[in-house]
Length: 254
Length: 325
Image (cartoon, rainbow over all chains, first blue to last red; front, side):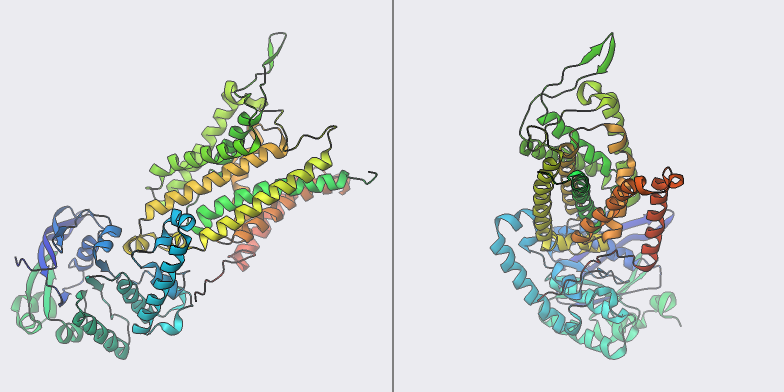
């Protein structure tokens, strides 16, 4: 196992009833990479993301992020350490506006502590103003600025995917786990979104993404990891993975 | 003073109790309307507030035994503390009670919170009925001192006094609550209401926020209990703290508009207004309706609720959209 990975999953297991969703899975993601995670439906990809983000507790194994062990930590602490995930099915906060959704993802907003409202009102106002400005920048980046004050429930499926990314960026993460970021997004928007992810990677962030769109995987990822039946069965450059007979048999098809 | 104060006193009484229900509705709105926590034991927190206040502010009550029969069992108390102290104690007691229930219950799924709270409220009421040495049992706690004692007694002036002081407290509570729910803290509550898991994945400790909202809501219900004790000057456990009180508050918040504090107050005045109005109409109603008018009221409330949920599910005053600058 490489020591210079930003995220390392070691022998992680998770069963739901009789189904072994993740079965002694071991993999690593390197800093400033765009790493793809592919595999057939039910391979355990989303479950693995949920375990890494702290939403499910693993039955066994270890997860290391930036030199700290994070398995067993609650999700809000993992976010604070700099690891954020987006949802395959958008989890927009329906009755909040788009801008509120994004501002909410700020990590250190003093007004979110009840006591601060009464004892540090000036700092609360300053923080909130600063985070709103930052949220507007991110909305511009994700082409949602025209919808800032609309309820999130009014967005289209593709716009909700953009909102997922916008919220993730607001927490200033070192690594973002994207669960099917372009599924249901039209081709032009998907290309823009992947361009944005490429720019952000050049800015120093790491992306680990689940995607079924092979164009995205083959053209945009530096490395690809293939899961099947809860385990990693292959990894390498997109072209190497594409040519791997094991992968062809289990996923890509002859 | 030759004016007829009978009707005015009556209206003053209506406004007094509507203020008490408004405070209850604000507490429930914080828990459910903003945070999505369904409290089915509102009456229990209301009870804690009312009894704590009554015990704190009432002079000593001796047991009254006539011919070996206990007429008034007497009760804990005799501290004769000022109302402000009694109300603060009520808020602390109800808030702590809410926190104690919430610590285990908030880890359960939403429907279990409802089951836990309704059971808790009934247990408290049964304690109040049976724990005579503390609560006076079914007799309850009489002789609660009013906010201002008029000599000679003046029901009209007493009602005006309560409306003025209770109204000021309600207004202050509304302003503080508005400030809180429209803050970044309140935004986290609304986020939890919409999707708790997503809110946690955005870095918020949802459990802590739910605990804060539930305990604060409980404390507000305790304040309502304190106001109720000095509005009626007498409390007893059977009727005033029955589950029907909880159900009324639900209806008030649903009708007025969940997630809108002014709506909650409007709902309290409307729904309690129907109850009070049906009592007033009793004397005017034709003889054959007199016995049934209370039940007609309940039917009307039911039909209105169904119509409202069909045609305006967000309530009379809907939750507003927060357009941020």
